[in-house]
Length: 534
Image 1 (cartoon, rainbow, N blue to C red):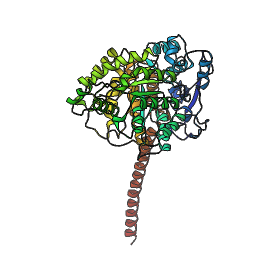
Image 2 (cartoon, rainbow, N blue to C red):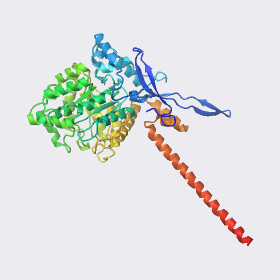
Image 3 (tube, rainbow, N blue to C red):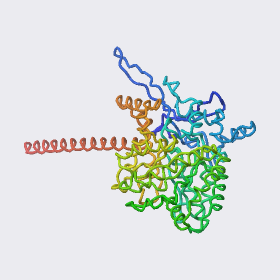
Image 4 (cartoon, rainbow, N blue to C red):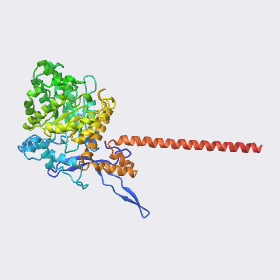
């Protein structure tokens, strides 16, 4: 998204920072080169330089104008050699296994460089070292999702002691969207700041769509495997089996999916708890597994075979996102017995995943009014042993269809401050329709705002650098710098141009009115002269 000189990104450039432990590492960032401050000293203009600002960049090669991309070829497999080297040296494949063995992988150093955003050059103290990254992963407090079959992805980390991340959802259906459109939306999401991507595609071309997305995606990709498993049995929930689900997992692991949402917390004995709700069970994955349990009157095969699932994931270093199948679908159902019963089960499953060296994080609500948000975070930390929390918003009110990217961003900022590690974005079309590119953009920006607000509240190292730089630029009327430092430079520039055009039109109108008045006066004067001449 580097643009021509005349546009908003004129003073942004893509730069790369090398590793120390692994010098071959190249971490891409956006560098904003600021214009100098103009001061008058002893009657003369003096230019005082402003330090550049480094911005976390999720755009991969798409924000580097020197790199040409072709979706048919995919993007560079930057981690391929790193994975090969681990195997050659007899090291564990997975990040958690390496971390527990005391090994700092190239992915871990990459993450530390990314998170710090050149803090050292700016004189900012930071605790985020490669060793700190390793420790957080080893203890299960952070997740570095990086399937060995998705070497195109740029390493990132999810944990409450790091920058708050955001996830975006895309996906076609049997009747809407195409492969090309979904790849375009995926790339679009990365450009605007999406840290991870969930592919929720359904229909006859699910596998092909996912393949194209993974090969062209520089961020981790997640899926909900039960969706594809259900398609294999023509949508008949009662026909689902462990064997069908297992084969689906392996298929997607082989493709390169980095994390799976698995609703293994649905238990036969807790399904009935949702009967008391205003909105029942709203999670699609939760509904599928609840129905299966009730039809067969037996425990979920996801819960029963969870150890087998972890054995598969460990082979590919795929993380598990433990799905909240009983999340509240309205604020009236928030923090109820069903939600917290499932949370207790997820805490058990986290420990089972860690025994297999599988990285795990916990999905959370949903719809929660402001006064009940903190309880969600506190119970999750306690019951799930400090595993990272990943929440959908939450939406703090249910009265704003068309504006749910705002209602959810309000809750997201608060729960991010309390410790949630990743926020699942919501678009303006939530509850209404599938999002298009503009909806994706609006959803991403709303949640990047929420995440950054949380980072400020958590006092993440260097979080205020960008705010301070923009504030100073605003005070000094350095317009280009304001645009370049903003979350959405294009929108900021567009509004500014509209205001400038309006001001210019107003000025023209005033000039025309003045000219008309003067013309009228002159005509009157001429008429009077003619009268007197007669």
